[in-house]
Length: 188
Image (cartoon, rainbow, N blue to C red; front, side):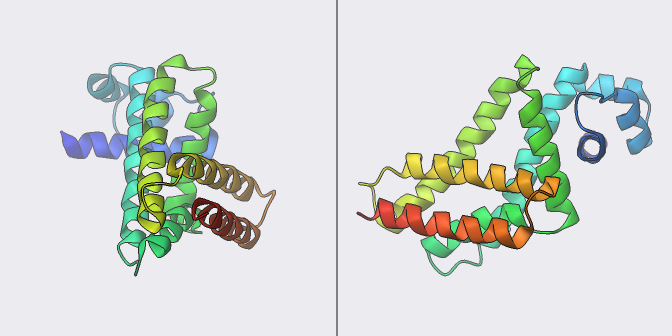
């Protein structure tokens, strides 16, 4: 059963990354996954349930590739950089995941049932980044504020890069500068 749900969620991410959420039809996801729509309803109850689980899936998948990058870090500062830069990789998986995340985030404005899971996923990411900042500077810093600013910036830079209004090198340069500013501020 897990493999079937995984297949459906992967198809949902691909469809959302290609076509967005507003016009999303369960039939499109079923066709992408090569299954019946009734199987989607069996596993996810309704479109809202599918979107909630897709949001969780996207968040978990992002954690997988950012944690893998962070595991190579020599120290907490390098870990922070690798985690944040993990969202600005020019790979199909990151592009697809980040596009779907941006679509789901924007949809939460119009889909109230996405707001709570989105807020929870965001809180987890901010908390993880804040913990890494604390390991760079100690417990006395306002790590949550810095983490909130940096994660918000990553999301905005990602959207600009993915929409073609900024190239990836520029997005990375801006993020590198923001990390330096936040860590210098946190250390004072």
